[in-house]
Length: 186
Length: 188
Image (cartoon, rainbow over all chains, first blue to last red; front, side):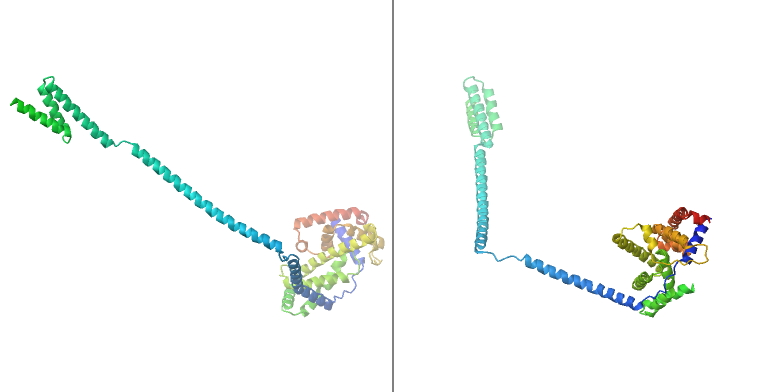
């Protein structure tokens, strides 16, 4: 088998090969290196922190804001005043808008009231119509009695006025006419 | 089994601050670790530096070792990692200094193959050495662990962190390349 032959060849070469010299492991060197590693592990974070502190201090010094000059102070003051004026202007504008809005509402109200006032009173209209109707009935009745000699039709109309419009002023007239006709018959 | 229990006791002792436990671990495993390093690096003979690095890494990592595998396997894993980086650094250093083909570099590794009564002579040994060194690390390591260190496939898979299937594939490919490079020697 090839594998066996290869194994045999390698083992023979190994037998022939130089053996490692008597290896003495230096334990004290190992301890020293281990202690050094341990020290590095402890000191490294401290060193890193120190470097970081120094870097931050340098950055802080570099970017420190310088004292403002006289001109810069004046500019700052003017900017503040402009902002204050801006605020007052905005407040005044707000007030003006409110007043204008109030005026508009009042004007609209007046308009509506005028429209309402221009609308005729329907009750009045009805009363007038009732009055007119009662008058026409009385007038017709008078014509029937005085001109056409139709006493019965006239009496009917007078009674109709009394029945339909009991509170009307023409009802009184209609009652008077009926009374006169009754007296004449008697 | 007794050895494993002993190892666990040593590890526990080390965790509790008993540094003499580490000395015993070194005594127990330094030869094996050195032998493995020697084989992985192409039998240079001088592996003291890399062995020192391996045991330094072991010392630093032993407290975190959770005994998921045997101490030996763990040490072998460290050995493989250290040898990889050692070999890489060595290659970079020497390639940058003098532009020499890798084959020649392997030939120049400090060694002295002893010619003995064995059928293998120095020339054959160099060929084998060259063939093994020419293997990529992902083939060479399984070959060394299986045929020279004579570890089981389970342990090798654990040490290399690969599946058994992947291990078989790598061994198969490694054998194929070695067969190509060492055809005459294999047929003998």
